[in-house]
Image (cartoon, rainbow, N blue to C red; front, side):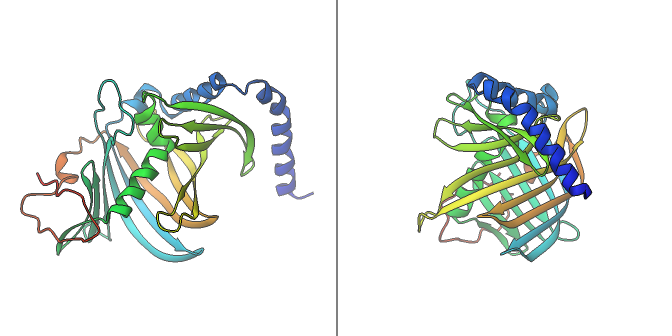
Length: 281
């Protein structure tokens, strides 16, 4: 018997041994505990206190499973202070993605005012559908939800049983917000960390169903007990479309507004499909 068959058999045995218990614990309270266990596994209060994060590594883009682009990239993320009490759909993040060998060739900036592409020619606002997709993806991201959205009114956790993901037994929870966004998340039964998430959206023109899957892997301590995945893979309608392999990740570096807003002297390039405000300093 091959080792792969043995591993698969053991995984199914582990699933069978927990299935009866899981069936008895299919309650919102049990699902909420799975989410709280995940938060603690990510670092608990230290994770919630993470103010910013800098990730550097390799980005790969795919089209129909074929490599369509690759680049070195550096991603800067800053979390914003949320209102008290927390409001639904609060956009609580700023992000800057820098591409190129020296991370100076091309930038994309997202903030609460919109998104921008920045090159030596100037800054061009992202088309509204592009930014809307970014925002919707963010609101479904389980790591963002655990950091920013747990106090949102109307956020609920529904049990969805147990499952095997890449030979890993997982507890499955559906996270539902006040706008009926549903994100199904697989949490590893031993490490408690999120392994996979799934959600779907509709194409705004054709209304076709678009299924979005994200796989999280290689969690490591990135400072003070905060855990973060060094490998992220995304699939759309069953086809791989993005992979990120981080070489280094650091947190709480005191990132300032200059990284995430446009300076007063930047040249603005018009974009017909955008309705974002310039957002200059």
